Length: 188
Image (cartoon, rainbow, N blue to C red):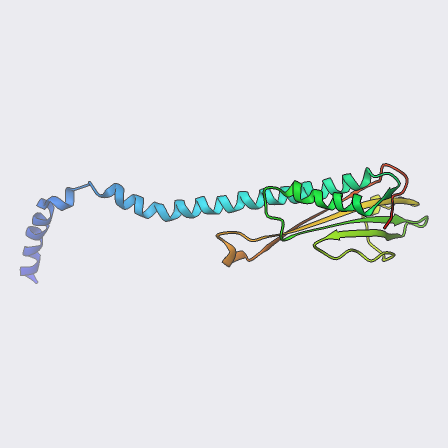
């Protein structure tokens, strides 16, 4: 043991004299190698989040545009008019791919007792609501003897990088508007 303790100071002196201990030329490369994965992950994560927020905003804008277009119609909406209204959704969603986009526009008739039923419904990429079926609406909108236009938009967002973690995210929104005229009917 005594011999080992006597050798340590001389070993430490030899290592301290070595040029590698005082060499700092590789420090920045080591720091860069440690920080790079964190920075790349942060960049890719923020890119995905900003893309998802932009698509969610487009879904809300699409729901508003569809309700607004349908509520501006005169007293009747024809098949050609409804096709144009539903086609407008792809324009609003641009530049994003619309293969996973589902849009539905429905008229909600509210009778004198406040009961809400579907008057007509059309869709693109989804299932239209059944005419005459009951629907629950917010109580503040349940004005007796009136009509509401409801647009429902759903979009399946598949993140490019985080898909294995989150899978496809469904972004959806709906919008109620009152028609500009008393009631809008649907013609075939």
